[in-house]
Image 1: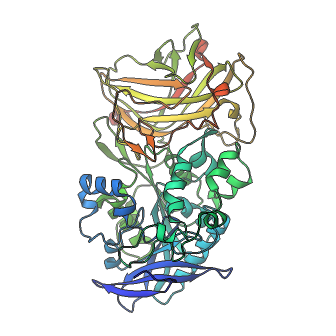
Image 2 (image 1 turned 180 degrees about the vertical axis):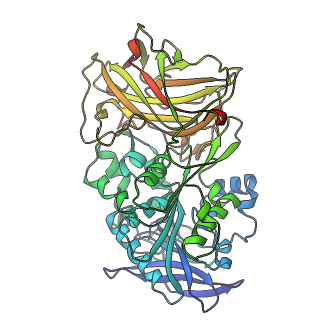
Image 3 (image 1 turned 120 degrees about the vertical axis):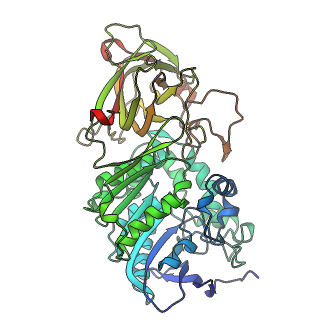
Length: 583
């Protein structure tokens, strides 16, 4: 029976005490609602917390049925050992943590799910709410006073934000695939608008805004409305939220709006386990950048593959998390003191991984190698004189290939491209895609975070955003200021540097390495059918496509782009890792 008002209730299930819709007081007098899963005893236990806008009562199986079905089919260990009654998207399963002496708390952020108020995603208000929630949890009689944060995506991104505020009871964080930069990671790749944000906000956030009420889903465990109790009109809902993605769309450069939603990573001092995915066009960059920039003296980087949601729930992921939090929250001897600073699952073209312990990132033994673009060829020798290459900006672009490799080649690390280009218009969008073909000329793709046929590496840049922050830039990671636009003069060449996000791939003997430079997202060859998510066809880049016509009017971005290659004017810098017996 759905209630007309929010009321706390509790029950005991298999030795786990569950308290539903617990009131969590905020410093400004507001109340957020949380579900608390804890051991049914009188002890004090460490806390694992999430706070966010996805609806704490929305069952994974209902809200994200496609992902749940694939998780069940491809990774059965993720579901084993649990009834899965309390599974919620991108949060820890309490049935796998409470028996080990942890308390799992899920808080609906202000304006989402069961928590009333103004929905303002990733805002300073939400960060301060999270701070208050952590301090509340750290001072409850059932709490040991140690609070850890564990969650994926949004629940990872806002870990970076709140950790920078340094709540006293925050003890350790594990941001699992979570971005750090609102502008560069979420909203605009190299200055180019990512269409993902609008689709995600409309489908995944606004559908569980507080007040959707009877038009939304029901918590299967309580019978209560996931986003209620009230049912508000569309007009009322609109007044109760900030159009975060819409604001980001209309702001072409970095300004106060994006800066307020981007943490100062240097303020983070608690222990950090940053878990990255090699191929997530929203999160990959953030996990590497976050690990690099935090002030924490105790920090670890782990990198894996597969779907965005997979390894968080598998035995591999849960064991890693438990070793980390067991050490820092419970004081257990988990062997974490021997964990290498960097732990990589290096990708092979057959979809397998090579697990490798490393001491730093990028790897110290990296052989930074420049490959030059030369009339369809990719070579380590700079061409002396070649004819410029013209391509239609909205066409497939120009591609460059090595000969078949005479020995395996490992690429693991960040990369960059330096291109000399001109446009027939006042701007040009540039997409640099790393490709591999087998000995029969078939395209190699790997399961990425959001695409079963993901590209192997990619970078983006809007030419008018080519200005670099020289102090922050490195040869393998150009850092663009994005504070002003510098239009092109049609026909005049300019040099641009493109950041290619970190990747890993071992290319076998007989295969070819390729680079495509285009003015649109690269699309995997073939007729499909291709998976569709949020109405977006997934052909190598998942839902992270850049085809918003407002952001890319054809009179500006539909012209012709010229690529100059003479005297090594256009090249890519790749992180080549020597074979073990060489390095």
